[in-house]
Length: 353
Ligand SMILES: [Zn+2]
Ligand SMILES: [Zn+2]
Image 1: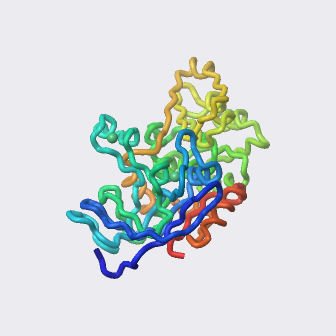
Image 2: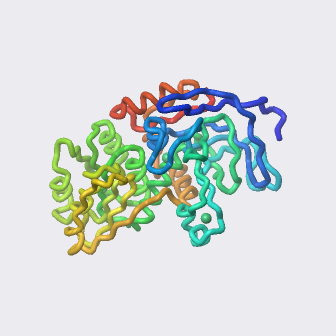
Image 3: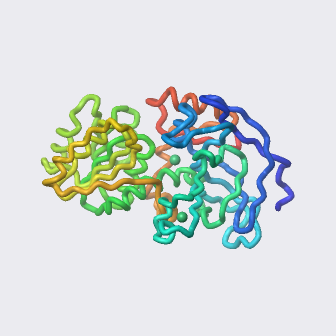
């Protein structure tokens, strides 16, 4: 261990619905194969906000004091035994899920489906709204020269959009529709643009989000509170529909819309948590179109490509970030994020202030 580390660290504990308290905890010691990272930036995810506001997401229930946060980047400050390939001072983006590495899903490469994955800020596993964290070296990805830890923290949501792009097998020349222009929808847009797609139409109800989508290169933005989205997409695609339809809102209405928007032979990719059992889905339009439906759960193997896309300027993730707040004001930051949804696209917490 390095001698310059402080005696202990600060953590933010969720202690109840919309309740937060700071405490001090020992700085963890890296085990063999792990590194100790000083966390610099953590993105606030929709899942963090769900846990904070409702205490649960589906079967995952927060029980007792709980640390939120899983979109993180920081600086390596100490190495566990046997660690090679990383040195103290290196900035890294950390992939937040530790898969078992042994099950059939892990061995097939689809480790996001590992039933034994340990994933930050998913009860009972705590997250990274704390100053230091230990993590396996193979899940810490070095940031290239010049890349910031804000961008590093945004690799996690970009990986979700990237995986959706991979599953859709998006190709240059195809037309895409993205439903929902929150953080993941915008990351989805960046991932598709990085793959060379240009005819990407984005649908949302919030003007701020649509403005971001337009600035990030959407071919058109459609406000479905004012315009019939099916008519708008049909007009933009000469009546064909979209080759690729991405659902990122998880709302019953937008999930149902995917069947109306997809072209013959097209692909629908569901990323939003469509957990609502009231989704009424008309499979009829899909039958004659031989359309495919795919679902997205997190990602696998996307960090290196996502980092490369950001470093090369193909995916300007900083333009998705709308708010940067200090760790010391986390409680008001989370409250604002919940209560001022129309004004905040993506919040990042600076863990050093
Ligand atoms: Zn996230
Ligand atoms: Zn596994």
